[in-house]
Structures are given as structure tokens and as C-alpha cells.
Length: 180
Image (tube, rainbow, N blue to C red):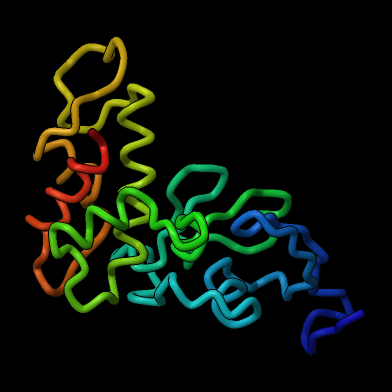
């Protein structure tokens, strides 16, 4: 049992179980540990990047039960029992995920720092559009089926991911190709 100074002797750790990229992981973490820090520092999954550490750049985006999250803002204990997919878990062995292939085909990778977050976010955005979830630019009225990923839809849905290399056009093309 770990005790931290200044806590009145209270245990400040929690045992949790996560399913990360299809593998069950059991860990005991300090309650203040972010999911990103758990992934990068404890599990050595360095695909998700620590960019701004304030949820503004999207470099740390992973999929939590299939939905996009900024892993720098999420405490690891809040993800107990969840399925976490990082960019390392998208490929099927040597076969890249279709969006990873599209990033290659359209030169969306650039320097690569934002790429893992962009790809995880793109996978989530495609799933959201297929499920008919509207975005801020979807025409009024509830969509009756999948939302078409126009350039505007992709830009809006990917707006939480910042690319400092300015590869947005290539990334938009890659997301649209993977969505087809």
C-alpha cells in the first residue's frame, strides 16, 4: 500500500484493469496518473504524444471504447475496465489500418508528431459519421443514416487535432479516402 505525504496516510493508489490494444493490463497507479502517462511511461506505448498536455492539440488522442479522447485529460482510474486503442493497436499484424494506408498514399504523415493522434481521431471521426452523428457543420435536422464526410465535415471533426506542419489538406484527403 502506497502512502503519499500530505494525504493524512490515505492510500493514493488504485488497482485497475484496462484492455489496451486487445491485451488485458492490470496496474496499480497513483490516482493522479493520466491515461497518457500510463500508456507512455508505464506501458511504453509511445505512439500517443504529449503535446500541449492541456487537451488543445490532440497529439495524445486515443480511442476509449471506440470513442476519441484526449488521453492527457483523462485520469487512468476513470478508464478502469475500458477498451483502449492506441495507434499501435490499429494495424492488424503487418497490415496497416486503412486510414494508416491512406495517410501514406496522401503524404499525411509530415513530421509524424501529430500523426498518431490524427489517425486515432480520424478513425473515431469516420465511425461517428457512419453512425450518423452530426457535427457543427452538418446541415440542420437529424441525419437519417451516415453523414457524408465532405471536406467541411472532415475539417470540423478533426478540428481538435493541430498539425504544426500544416498537412491538413493531405490529412483531409486521407480521411475521405479511408471513409469510402
